[in-house]
Length: 332
Image (cartoon, rainbow, N blue to C red; front, side, top):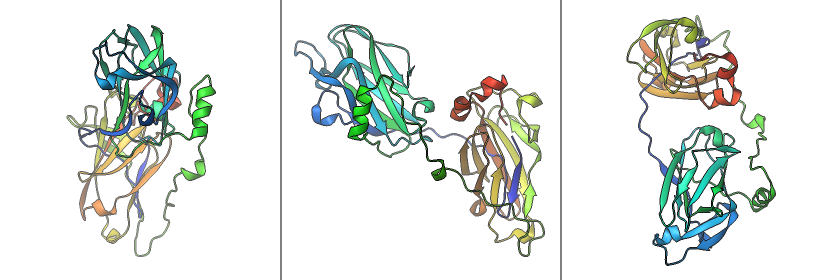
């Protein structure tokens, strides 16, 4: 973890807290094969299976084709998404689901005359630019078939449909990749300047660098660690799928009373939650950028506990191939 500060505006670093079980909410629905109920369909024909088959009414309507494609817009890159797919076929098929050329799961075997329902959590890389294009392809069998497609998320915001022009573009392209052009001026953070003088305040900046407490198992056991610094360079090991935690304590000078205080992290690799006195006050994804948050409402007059829950291998780390290049965890 890199330097942390309290500014007046206050800057600080480090926080951790117990993750709560996430509730998933339906944010998109595609009743495949029903002309008026499949707004996210890009490519694929409608088909109704024979009454001789024993599937449900939902399963018997489907989209089919060499490739069946669906596109969704306005995904929240900070949220989690799960797709639920209903398959049904008149003969055995093996179907692959891909995003941006990469499979999202193992190939799915669909037996004849049997409904198969699959739920798949998406890696955030699949919708890193706020768009999702799902491609269904038959690895075995006449064609790909999809009878139902729902998307669930930890955020309630409904997903949007692609414009008609964008749909046409996707139909005619050979690679189904989303637009990665981003207007950086709209998303770049604006940081508060480090104050050199604040009226009636002797020292407007407090550095939180130094010895913190560290837990490699989400707060079950604490040991000392130096901040700034990477945990792997200080003898700690953290499972790639786990969260580590940093903890420190600080007190505010008396002349900071009734002032606005910001906490700033110069860099924490690479995804982290910030907790102050038991309250989650911030979240950031990106190990090479600074992050600051106003913590004034959560401060105590005297003693304050600051905890930072950190995961090294995140979407930000994956997109930058940072751990791959370093050949060790960069967490900290």
